[in-house]
Length: 232
Image (cartoon, rainbow, N blue to C red):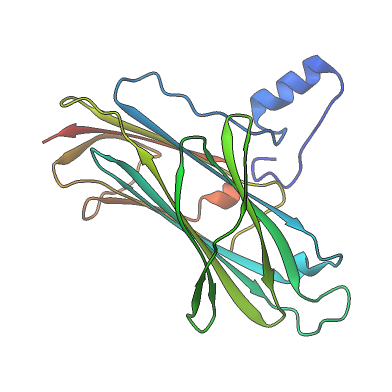
């Protein structure tokens, strides 16, 4: 249940309310912060196989995120790697045609979207679907991963900050996991200026070179990160 390998839905409103409070319903969550000088960030990757096959069985995923925060705002880069281990185009394998959606903060400004091949060749995506849903910006496009190949999707966006000139800085980042999704590897790096001093970090993590790193935590389910800094 915590890994979101199974989800529940009840028509009984009281039961459904309890399920949602436990996080077992798979609903889209909201991020709020009561502190002054606080930034909120959000990410939810949602895949849909539109290829009329069972290629999901053959897909291995890796994800890397880099959040860079300063007084001007936050830059968030997400890299998702898809490896299709299928050896034949015959059903149930074949090419993985994935309609991929990124649920982001409504204020997110898309900087770049790239599709990278295993050779390292990058192509910039110039068109995608974009809409607002339940207070989120949703960016969607199709990524096709042929058999015995790798494709890497890279998306970068920015969020503007509204920090005051002095005092603490706060960041709350919620990364939701799609039900049934699994990653062979995932890492999240959060970098900050040299004159920012970490005061509280949740979940607790060692600081190295003005960067916090979280490894292999998405397979445990939705993850919430809270960090507070003071000026040194």
